[in-house]
Image (cartoon, rainbow, N blue to C red; front, side):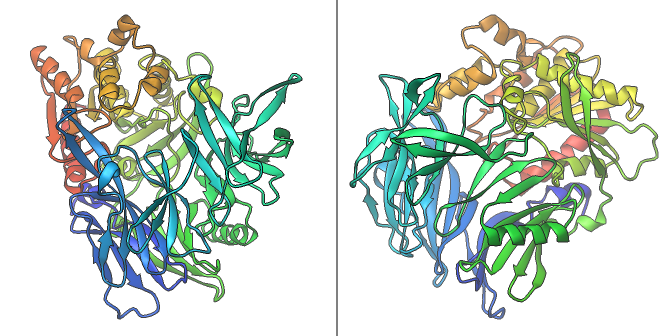
Length: 613
C-alpha cells in the first residue's frame, strides 16, 4: 500500500452519531471504497449491524430522528433534458434501523427535481414521530415513519423560521420585492400575528437587519448574527421593546475570528453555543453541561481540534471527533456518568506507516503591508536542506485552512515536499474587511498574496526556489492555472482539479444552474467588464513560456463545469505546450467523492510533479 492509497482512500469513518437513548451509533463508513450507513448496537455488540447503501447517490450527513430512525442527506447528479444541464439534487431519507429499510419522503411530486438542500428546522423534542423541514420554499411537518407531509401555513416568500422547542414559529425572514429588502418578522400575539422588527439609527427608525437564531421564552429578547456594520461576525443578544431592537451586546466575542456556526441542541433545536476557527475549530457552549464536557475533552486532547458531534438526550454519553495537525480524525465515545473514554474509530487506520510532516502556523506581510496568516509544512524525512515546495491554495475562495489534519497536505509532505497554504485576502473567518478585500481580486492581489508568501519562504532559505509547483482545486485550481501561465518565472508546473480557466464562462454557467450572478459578481467582478475578465483568465494567457499543466475534472461537476478544463487543454495543445495532460473522472463531482478518483489524482499528480519540477 503506497502513500497515495493510504491517504487517498476515503476516510474509514466520515461521521458517527449517537442515538437519543445512547444505546446505538450510526456511522458513515467506508466499505470497499463507497460510503454506507452502518448502525451498531452498543449494548449488545454481538448484534449484527445494520448496513444500508444509498445506491448511486452519495451519503453526506446523518443524524437521529428518534431511537428507531436515522435521517440522512444524500446527493446525486440529475440531467434535465429540458434544460440540457446536469444539476446536483439533494434528498433526505429516513432509515428504519429495525428492518434496514428506508423511505425518501421527497422523491415524488413537486419536490422530485427540486434544486437545493432540505433543512431540518426542528426535531420536535415532545413529538418523536415528526420533524419540521424547510424545502423548496415550504415549511413541512414530516412523519418519520411513513414520510407523510403536512404543509404548514406560512407567509409568502418567508424563510429562516425560528421556532420554540415545540415547533411554534416565533420569527422569520420575509423578502419584499418592492423594497428589495428582507423584513425580520417577529411574533406579536395570536397564531399568525407578526410584525417587522425595527432598529433606531441616529434617531430614525429603520428595518432591523440580522439573522435571528433564537427567541427567548418570554419573547423579550433575541439572539442573532450578521450585523452588517461590524467587522467580526458574532452572536449578538438584544432586547425587544415594542418591536424595536435595543440594548445590543455581543455574547461571543473572541475579538479576531468570525462565528462560523451557530450550535443548536440536537433534540429541542434551541441555541446552545457557537463555533469559530482559530488554528482549530473552537466551540463556545452556553449549555453548562456541554461546556464542562468540552473543557474536559480539550484538557484530555491538548493542541487538537475537538468537536462534540453528538450526545444522548440526557447529555450523559457523547461522541467526540479529535484531530490535530499531524494526527488524522479519530472518534471517541465518552460516558460521563462512568468517567470512561474509549476510541471507537480511526479515519485513516494505516496512517502510522507514513512519516508525516510538521505543520506550523506562520504570518508574513504582503506587498501592500497586509498581514497574511498561513501554514507551512516541512517533510519529516528529507535529505535536502531546502526541499521542493508545493503551493496548496484553498478553494472557495471564501473559506480557509487550519491546523486540523489535511490529507492532501500530508500526502505531499510524506513524499518529501514542503507545503505552503496561505489564507490569502478574501479568505473567511478573519472578519468582513479581510473577506471583502479579496472581492474582484482574482489574479490580482489574492495572487500577489500567494506569490509574496512564496518569496518569503525563499528569502528565509526554507525551500528550493527552482523546484516549486502549484496544486489546487476549484478556486485553488484557478490559482494553479494562472500561476502556470502568468507566473511562469516563479513556478515550474501546476496541477488543477476543477479549476476555472475562463472567468466569463462562470456567469453563463450560473445562469444555467439557476443560481444567479450575485456570488460571481461579488467574487470575480462585474460580468460587464469583459476586458478585465479576459485579462485574468488563464485560458487567454497561454503563451510560449506557459509551464506544463496537469488538469483533472469530474464529469458530473455542477459547480465548475468540466468544459473549463476541456477548453484549457485544447488551448494548451494548440499552443504546443509540452507535458500538459487532462484527465476526466467518470461520474465524479466537484468534491472528489470517489475513492478511485482520489487515489488516481494523488498518484498521477506525484508522477507529473516529479517529472516537471
